[in-house]
Image 1 (cartoon, one colour):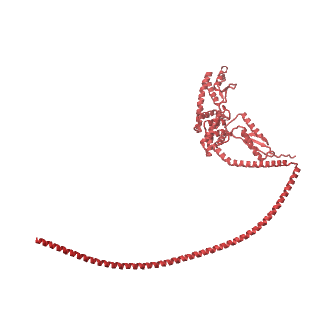
Image 2 (cartoon, rainbow, N blue to C red):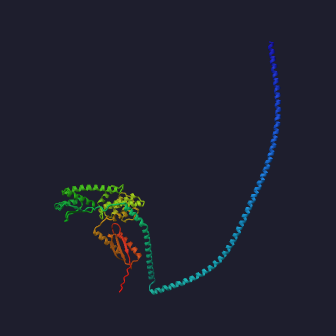
Length: 528
């Protein structure tokens, strides 16, 4: 027990000693730290004082540098200002010089204006004086003219109206002369400009399209083996020939001509049916009314079928698409139609290709030009059945089948019956003329040929001043000789043009006709 107590007392004393030692150590440490802090504050104060002194020195240096820089800038600005001021003073002096110069110029101009005003006043005075003199002279001239007019009227014994009429007649002659000169000049210019181009296009079209000569005309005669066949064709009391004419609508002429029977009909298709039927009957040898009707029906069916095939081939050859079946049928009928010996279908195909070539040269629609050319004579397929010319009939047919306006105008106007409203109409007219006028293109009967020549000469002779007219070159040219005393050179041009227009209006002819007018003065004297 006592030992325990002793141990507790020892432990307590040790703790007290430790506590005292800890307190003393802390006090010593605090003292040391306090001393160190004081020392550091002193050092800090010294460093702060050093920094302040350095800053003051730096600020003084900066102030001195700024003062130096400010003085330098001021001096530079002052120098620049002085330079600008000097320049401004120079400019002001130059401006003053220019103003002084202008003032001098203005003063000189004012002096010149004063001189000119005085000159103008003098000129006005002279003009006024001259005007007065002119008025007096005009009055004197009017008096002289009146006296001269009265003297002329007395000398010529003409009234005022007669004198005016003579003056008007003279003016009319002068105007006619001037108009003739202007017309001649314009015509020559147009011909010079267009002739070469049109010639090139036509020559190109002719060279690029090569067509054969005229196809055979529709045959109108039937060869028979012997004259005995004529009696069989006629039949007892003419029953066979009457049955044939009734079935075909073709007139049969059996005359004394050996080995030939003639067939006549205004319809070329019916004529072809009659020709084929008669040939078949003659080769068959059985000729009687019943057989005639059978053969005619067979031939008619065959010809109708052939017409459609020919029309289709023509459309394919001309490369024209979209034609109505009725138009194709009419094209086929043109195969049996001739004009001056020229097969109309071959002529239409030829015109179609010529139109395309010329249209291509002119940068037009070649397909439309071909269509216009192929259909331009479509009216000839039915012109023997319908009253009117084939251009008007063809236009009506094409309008019925809703063809384009260009086609309608080309069909109606390719002979000049209606004005051309599209460029394809003159192309068709030119191609139609080329096809008809080429060598071997067409032919006509002797009677019609002589009649046409006489008509040409009569038209030319109908004009005043024409002494004689001659048709030459197979009617493709007419030479007109005028009286040189009645017709001058200017009027000759007008008469030639009027003759050509009258021929176009009054005549129908293939191709074109050249009008050549001749005027010459012949002086004849005799030495005796």
